[in-house]
Amino acid sequence: AQTVTQSQPEMSVQEAETVTLSCTYDTSESDYYLFWYKQPPSRQMILVIRQEAYKQQNATENRFSVNFQKAAKSFSLKISDSQLGDAAMYFCAYRAFWNSGGSNYKLTFGKGTLLTVNP
Amino acid sequence: ETGVTQTPRHLVMGMTNKKSLKCEQHLGHNAMYWYKQSAKKPLELMFVYSLEERVENNSVPSRFSPECPNSSHLFLHLHTLQPEDSALYLCASSQDRGRPNEKLFFGSGTQLSVL
Image 1: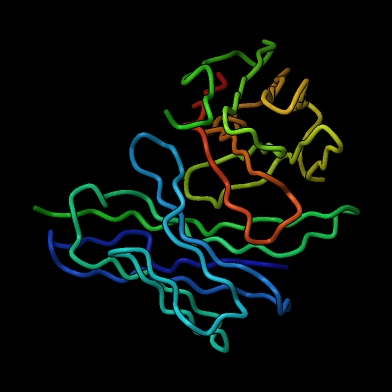
Image 2: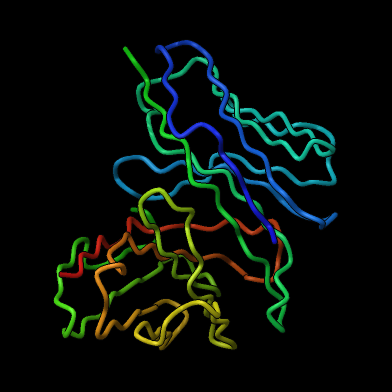
C-alpha cells in the first residue's frame, strides 16, 4: 500500500526565516510523482510544487524548494524568506498508477502539517 | 476566480435528509474528483469521474452517489448519512486523469455536518 507520512503535525517560523517541512513515503513503484499542496484558511488546496521521481534535480518554485532523496523516500519542502501569507496547512502527496481497471493515477495525501508564521 | 466552484459552502443536515453537493469547473478539464477531508486524517479519494468513465473507490458507502451530467459539472448526492460522514468535501478537476504528473485544481469545499 502507498502511504505518505508527515511527522510534524505543526510547525512555526518567524517571518523572513526559513522552515523545512518533512515528508516520507512508502512505495514499491519506480515511476511516480510527488507534490506539495497548500491549504490556507480559505480551504482551497493549491499546488505549491511538484517533483518527478525520475529527475535527480530538486524542483524549485520561487521561495519554495524541495529536497528529494529517492533512496530514502524522503521529500521535504523548504520555504525561504517566510511570509505571513505562507501560513496554511501543507500536504505532501504521492501520485502513482492505480490499478482500477483503467488508465488512472491515484493521489495519496499525508495528514498535513500546520504552518504558523509569526510576525 | 478559482476555476472550481463548490456550493454550498456549509451544509447541516439530519441523518434522514437528502441533499446534494455541487461542483462546477470553468477550466475546460476532462476529469473531476470528489475528496473527503476529515480532521486529522489524510484526504480520501471518493470518486474520479469523466464523461467516459466513473472510477469508484471501493470503500465509499452507497449513501454517497456521484453524478456527472457533463464535463463541467459534478454532483454528490447524499442520503441517510451518519454523523461520521461529517467532513469537508472537496471537488477537484484536472485536464486528464491518465497522466501521472497531472495538476489538480481544487474548490474551496463544502463543510458538511450531519446531526
